[in-house]
Amino acid sequence: MLGVAMHTTIYTLFKRGYNKSQIARLLDVDRKTVRKVIHDIEQKGEVERKSKGSVLDNYREFIEVKVNKGLSAKKIHQDLKAEFGFEGSYSNVRRYVQKVKQKIANSKVYMVLTTLPAEEAQVDFGYIGKIKVDGKFKKAWVFTMVLSYSRYMYAEIVFEQTVETFIQCHKNAFKYFGGVVEVVKIDNLKAGVLNVDFYEAQIQKDYASFASHYGFLPQPCRVYTPTDKGKVESAIKYVKQNCFSGEEFKDIDEAREYLKNWLDNVANVRVHGTTKKVPKEVFISEEKEKLIALPVEEYYISRSSIHKVATNCHLIYKGNYYSVPYEYAGGEVEVVEIGSFLRVFFEGKEIALHQIVKNNEKGKYVTNKEHYPSLNIPLIFSKYLTVSLNFVIETNNFVLDIVIIALFYHAQLRIGLHLVFILLFYHITAGIYPQ
Image: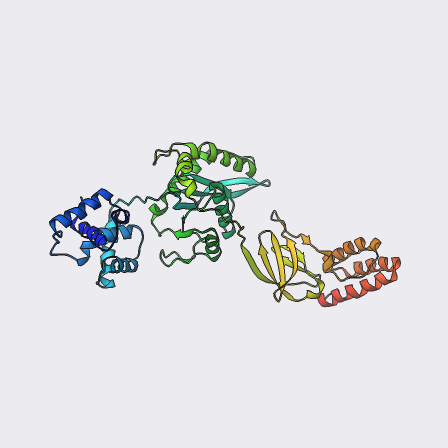
């Protein structure tokens, strides 16, 4: 049964221009009840108010709804002024909100948060143990995104929780759903949130940029409020127990294939324990068509850093060596990683472009032979010269240099002289002298 304060709140909103459906959604009250309250007040006059207590008692239910949605006292004070013309002080609202929060904290109940189709998704990671990758066991997590309305879900196995992985998982999930939701509720992961204050949350800049590109609003969950992301936590628990518990996989490929089949043939076609409906059926019939369309252009995270070019015309990036035109040797350049490509800039001009070494390999040389000085060498010698130069550069052996020079000198005097000048320049600048 609604209290006097709620009757007053309903009628005040109605007088301020809100229709019955809007009031019902705002206060989480049945529309028929709203209609009855308005009718009774208009027929019988204003509801009698209590003579004692706080002036905010008249707005208690409204405030409780706002508190349960996570709004701060300052935001509630602003809403009271905007919605009801409230003239009380912020400090009065803050004290009242604190009492309401304390009452909620002392109780064992919580508000069930309902959403509309395509309105919200919840995401999180859950640890699932170790899985064999390239013959070695690595710690693994399952990333899960669940649509709050239909409970249709996506999951994939990852081995890190970096920003790049977090964003890629989102991209894979949206592709799986065929569209994007309006709001994504995220736990306070470093990959997504830098500051855990709910209303002043500092979203990690790459994730914020990604969210803007895809058109959704990232919403961090309140600290110590597990009910904010109850749907995804239940989903992760379900994935761990129903999909991975007791299973052993020979490698990561088998594990990923098993998870994919489980999603399509078990998780999304079962009768959900809470909704008593089949997630896939609800998704197809009520939610899919309401999703935001996927962006036409792909989103890439760009990484920019300054690197020094060694005298062998290569810079080091993530443990591998990438060539740069020889005239930039010894200087500094800007390196930008975009997708699978490495772009190298000097004073805003792109001077090199390389495919990034994949599969976590280290110590690899990615060399564009055009980045070396042009020697006008006959075609018959060019292949051997390039191989020799790379070998000399990697060994830093002056005696070996002289042997190779002698071989080329014997073959053709002009080539040998060119090599002498190039290798002397390299050794002098690198601080390596003949002993």
